[in-house]
Length: 351
Image 1 (tube, rainbow, N blue to C red):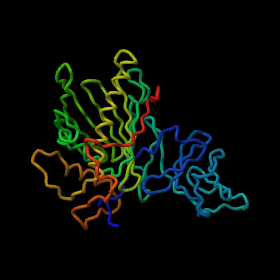
Image 2 (cartoon, rainbow, N blue to C red):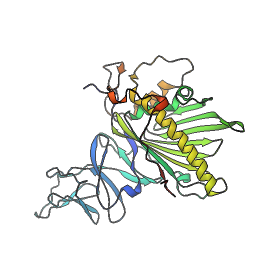
Image 3 (cartoon, rainbow, N blue to C red):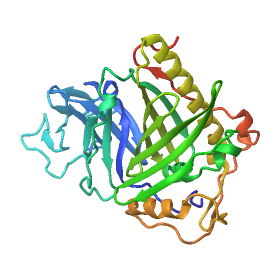
Image 4 (cartoon, rainbow, N blue to C red):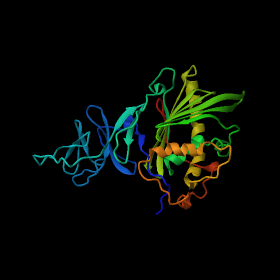
């Protein structure tokens, strides 16, 4: 079967869950095209490791236990520490020094668990900054979350960030963001834009400013109607499928109820736009040489930035990469698109 995209899974920091997902009961996960196991040791440290015991292949996410700071295989009781080293074999006086479990660097930051993925196990190449607004600051609301699984690559979805024109035709907005700045480096990219928001009291000037750290994490600041921060995390499940997690906080507006209602309305609008984008992402072909208009956004500059995060070869055998044929999705269109979103308001989840 031909590849869906010319590019593989990128490297970088990616969200692999929230702190409550990592407990002393090991849990099976699947990201980066790999079976993984998530667990938390007795000292509270979160770990993410390859799932299969190197002894005889038992999946540690199904039946393993945690004893102190070690994970114990359910098949033969072999034990491994947080670095993946075999520490004990209960029916042997010796350990197996070659029996190591591949371990992904993980850290808890900004209210989520982040893991560093690199196909060649290279060490992390940059840090992830703290976001004060997500740390329970009194001037900002509790976090509201949405989550989507989408059959598209990280890069293909992120290309929307420089595509201002699609807001008019996919999302039916009267105004589109006006790009003021798009600066790229390694690993960061910064986009600054103005936005006119129509309101019952007339048009209000606002801004959408985005700061990305690699392909997996973006901090999006909205200002105008209500100051909003969206910590957007996109994680590859496979090269052609990913999970998107949005984490919203809003500057308090005087009372809790007003802030919550305005925040929920904002989240609902973003949720609607994701549902409109989804059938485009899942059905579009990737064109290596798109036929661009003179007023299109900096697509090729974005692609050059994204290309820095591929350690494996990027395909060059074709110019057009069409999607799979999905008969059950032929009727999808932006006007009636649906997406399965998990909504979480951390203070009082909706019933």
